[in-house]
Length: 159
Image (cartoon, rainbow, N blue to C red; front, side, top):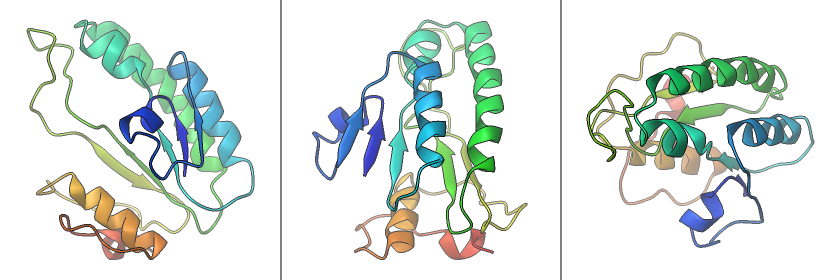
């Protein structure tokens, strides 16, 4: 597994082949786009830190919006380079609404977008019972032991 941002620290390096630390979203997005252009197999796990640290915790809704617009442009580039057997999952590790009073993590649901050449368009995954569904889906996709929690949605989205 290749990681971008602080992901290797979150997992204490466990399962990480190589970790790339980044200063901001722009650097993380550029590295993510570079990696998707290279050949290889496995998982690239990225954390774009600005959404949380720069905008969410600082209640900067306008900055958060600009960061989303910036990422939207890079996401199109990223998805355009996916190989026929790859898919991209975009989510967050927790809610952090920049319009909510206070600077703590908020309790709203995190978004989940799944895209790629082998992903059936327009599938509504609904509100998932647990974030562990992402882990269960990745485990199924990579053919490894499923975690104790979570239900895979791979069969729902795979074309």
